[in-house]
Amino acid sequence: MGRTRELIDKLEEASRLEKEEWASLIRERTPEDAEYLFEKARKWQRKYYGNKVYTRGLVEFTNYCKNDCYYCGIRRGNRNAERYRLTEEEILECCRTGYGLGFRTFVLQGGEDGWFSQEALEGLVRTIKAEYPDCAVTLSIGERTYDSYQRLFAAGADRYLLRHETADEGHYRLLHPAELSLANRKQCLFHLKEIGYQTGTGFMVGSPGQTPETLAQDMMFIRELEPHMVGIGPFVPHHDTPFANEAGGTVELTLFLIGLLRVMFPKLLIPSTTALGTIDPNGREKGVLAGANVVMPNLSPVSVRKKYELYDNKICTGDEAAECRGCLQRRMERIGYELAAARGDHPDAAA
Ligand code: 5AD
Ligand code: FES
Image (cartoon, rainbow, N blue to C red; front, side, top):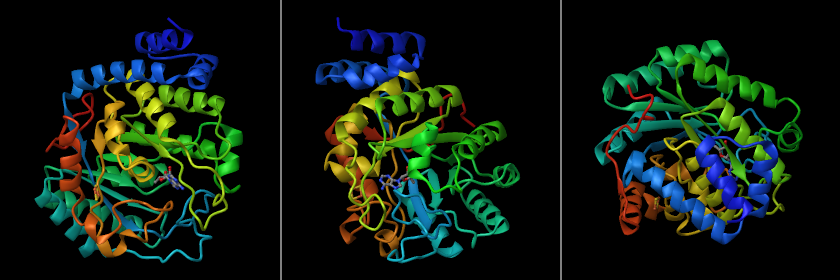
């Protein structure tokens, strides 16, 4: 048995690796190693989740953002982005539609948009929780103060998604302008966990400057944070950003990393992301077969979907995508899985 498989076994056994071990596992992987990994990943996936895939209805409620991350299509410096905000009533309408379709988690995602005040956000969370007490509310609205996170949690928010993007200082600097810092990003994540949110982090695969060593740091940071959810998807260049001409991430490496995450943390919630579905027509199915167990179809009004363009060619933005849930249900059934009609809490954090 080769060294890579020994490392996969060690990861399964000990749930951690040394930095050099992570890097060599990632650098030396072969397609055969990947198959070996995915079988283990599916074994754990089956043990904790059977053939069930959890769903979250994603509401992209604002594409205004005060940040200028070099990879992102809705960065403030992109003058060509057509900006929009949904009204509270429009957001609630998305939830109403979503509830009828069977969603029991609503993810409110947006750029870092100061137009929505702390009070407005708390009110929104309270209103959704009052109308749908059997649903989870997930926020994905960026870096905020401890106090702000705390009050949103008190208002009823259950979960929070904040990808760390990269856990390597030098790499972080390459992807972000000087006013953003990895230290603050990590601080936010530890705060979210401390407050009691089911916390999700993650990173892009194949972002400019990423190496097996920076990925090793990502895996070690995730080990340290012990989040409930980790979302990873390929970097996909956006034409109106400084990274327009950079190469994108691959399906192959994304799947391998999903498998590693499942084997490291067998109960982890791992979405099979829209970005993965964007660079491969069967990407989301492949993600589930590599160990992912969550899909996050779009619930935003079709009229704004094209505008929430973090990267080029994003799927589910046309009229044909009015009903992503049905589409994903068929896709999952074709590979022997089914969508679960539950909130889908982390097994160790169930309310
Ligand atoms: N390609 C892929 N993913 C991207 N994101 C932002 N821009 C891109 C891109 N060009 C991801 C980031 C962010 C999440 C909401 O979308 O990881 O955290
Ligand atoms: Fe959106 Fe298929 S999931 S169109």
